[in-house]
Image 1 (cartoon, rainbow, N blue to C red):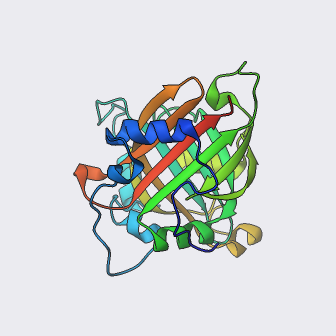
Image 2 (image 1 turned 180 degrees about the vertical axis):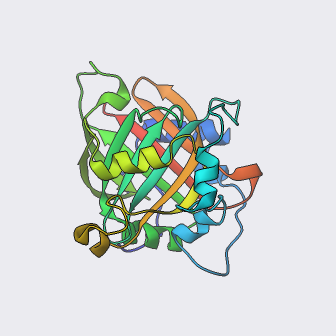
Image 3 (image 1 turned 90 degrees about the vertical axis):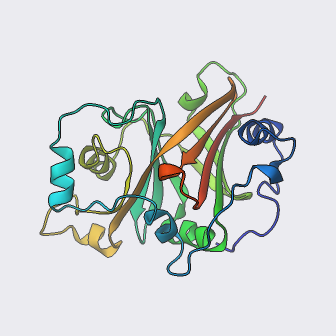
Length: 244
């Protein structure tokens, strides 16, 4: 996917999104919400975000972390978001109110991991917008099924919210159960022997972070990634908007 150098919401100047951006920045324009970022000299794309978080693997670090008593280490009510997928496959997004609980929202984005990686290499500010064109308003916003997906202003396609998670998605959620934040590579769901179809898609990578959840109205919400310890780094925002 070519990088986008125009306005973050070129082709999608949605008033609800603009309102959420102003809420986040406390300013009258979207340009003023950008926080200072530090350019990385080595690596790009997902690696920029990986450097912000603890690196967890299938080894003793993961086992030790998951084996600790299940009590919340973070006392705030931040939402947990996980972006994961095979390096040669599509990216999935899962949102949890608590990392110990099952996700309240899971979708497979209509874009390859490599495409998201290119967007991250091109810009430290990543904005993913999901727009529901349903106008009945009978459901809560995150209960809508069909979503148009935009990445940095470019429409990348449509997706459908999962009613039931796939085996790979369940594997990720179970492996990361209780993990508040982290990034790395997860073990193959099929074990050491390896599923040929899974191995052909490359490693299963993930990035989990805490997000500030801002509710603009019953038809608009936003998630803003919270960088660890307030460190400067890539900004990731996810917007949910329903047509009015």
